[in-house]
Amino acid sequence: MELTNWLEKRVRLSPKRTALVFDGKQETFSEIYDAVQKVAGQLASFGVRDGMFVALLGKNDRDTFLMIHALQQLGAKTVFLNNRLTATEMGYQIRDAQVERCLYAADFADMMANAAGDVRAVAFMEVMMAESSGVMQTVSHFPMETVASIMYTSGTTGKPKGVMQTFGNHWWSATGSMLNLGLQEGDSWLCAVPIFHISGLSILMRSVIYGIPVYLEEHFDAKRVDQFLRSGEVTIISVVTTMVQRLLDTYTKSYHPKFRCMLLGGGPASKAILESCFAKGIPLIQSFGMTETASQIVTLPPEDALQKIGASGKPLFPAEVKIGEKKEILLKGPSITVGYLNNETATKAAFDEDGWFRTGDIGEIDEDGFLFVLERYSDLIISGGENIYPTEIEHVLLEHPDIVEAAVVARHDDRWGQVPVAYLVTTKVLNQEILALFCQLRLAKYKVPHSFYFLKALPKTASQKIQRHRLYKNDL
Image (cartoon, rainbow, N blue to C red; front, side, top):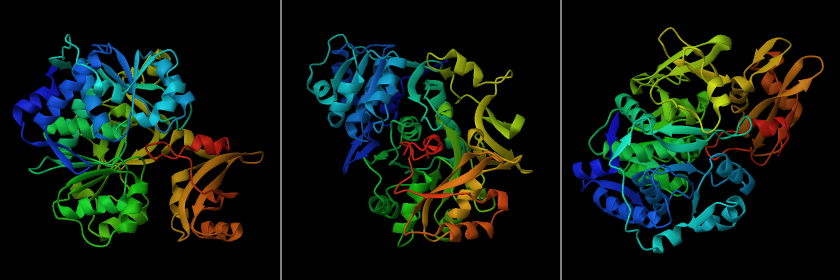
């Protein structure tokens, strides 16, 4: 099945609608289309062509926005590079994806010089100043099965793999989200999450498919975002837990009635955060998704948010979820990746014999069909035969008024096999014995951390997921 070129179709349907709001400037789909066509022609002059793998190292800004769409117009497959990685990490991904061109923003010139190796690297500015190729030809259709983007898994558990996302994956992700959250006149989506990550890229795809504006922010600034949410300009925003906490810290008065969805991904929020949002009338909606599912695939229906605190929700309309062996969450649906780039072994291991995708997450489904995500299977701590879920301990620790962030991991123990230890970010020095007592009053004895370690910041990925494998290895 083929879909018409999304941007071309959108500009024919609604050329005068706002497509992008960045740095105070609004641009219509017609204006964006013209700018994208120009960049596509300039990219063609550097040999970018249909089917080519092209690495993209940019920021949340207009130039990167245009590059993403221009590469799609040419039929190139974009390999998104996380701009928070080291040159060594980027170099691995460039080689693994067999990239033929690297495009980069000026801020990352030194990084790219060390990462690109023998691959030709071209700065955005060099592209923008080039003459357009006279042989540039945009693709007329986006075949559903064609790979549109590659994102490397965040590496929370080890070496990253290149997740292939097809146009069909992006289409069904957008469709499933719309069928759950709805689409209303005047909708707009604020994007302060990285667009090299699926949470950000999915917003760009939905903008074109739905015909709504993206309010693109280069960085997450809680005070600035707070103003947007109170202004009535923005109706939806995607967030992770740390962003929610910073917005709660900034919160002074009610958001605008038009603001209807704060979509939470990247891991569950604590009960305290959820209750604080609901008390303030903040429309927080939990979801569950992965790079491999092209963003959210399970989302809590808005009408059930208060009754199902802690749930990730139900699978979006075209998807299915079930619990497999060892309580692993299994998924099926058209938004799920076709596999990992140049890694047939990992692709085969990711699916069971019936085609269900193995998430590596532990969960349960209640009697009403709502999914509760308990833990990454690799994060599970088994102590003396007892299963310990780090998230449960972390939520208890976060109830302490002086603990800002918490991460619990396993440590080898000769007697018990494994025991939990906690890494904390605090507002002041805390006594270990008092912390242990705090936990003992709220947790079974075997769940109480055996040690507490204090850090200035927890190691995290660009999408703000805690890098537990670095804590395991004490790589801090």
